[in-house]
Length: 292
Ligand code: HSE
Image: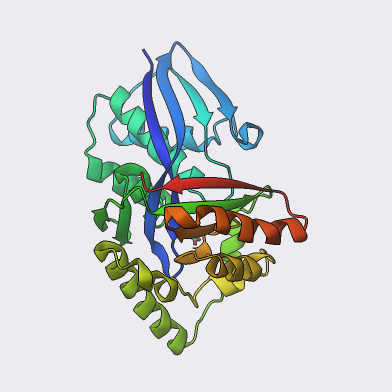
């Protein structure tokens, strides 16, 4: 028998919360998994399916394997079906969804041995941080710290009326490459800048003070370095704020740009930011999302 799980997309960092803040969004990948007589059979369909490995390098499989090893589950063969709904290499948490989905499905096949928290820590150790895996598993906004072993977090559900508009160019950007743009050292004043913004961001989202998001989403740790790979970034940021968005930032490692706005600003934000992509002749998709 196949078990089936559905995992949401997620947006990490939200500007200053590098590697620690993330939010689950209502775009999903579905994964079915079951034991078969022998071998590994992976079937992929949906968004960017050509980019997804169907060998032992498949991330859903690698994550499942971790669970089977940890739970000492013996099996002859494995079948995995992936219906992907999250664009790959876009900064929308496709890897985290694959890892969480692989782990949840495998754990169910193993008899549900691992707890929710054990799955989270196993997933965070595969990624090195929990900013995508925690919301992918828990839903909601998650403020996290992964200390190398344990994930400490607080979750908050955000109202559906708060819109997350994702602008996703049709070019892949591997997190690895986006991380290679980051400096080895940063200025003390940049660290202080981010500590303040990141704290205010958490407080603003937990208390519904959306008027503070514009300042609270500013970042000096990663976005300016990554903008070298994402030349449209600054113009998109400007247009989004002009159009009345509460805030705008790189989603995860990019290249997706995410604007947060109220329902009545969705159309103007889509139009304003869209005009940047059009004028720069960049193919893109728009996803109008909310917190899952
Ligand atoms: N926090 C990560 C980064 C996002 O910005 O590189 C991908 O997990």
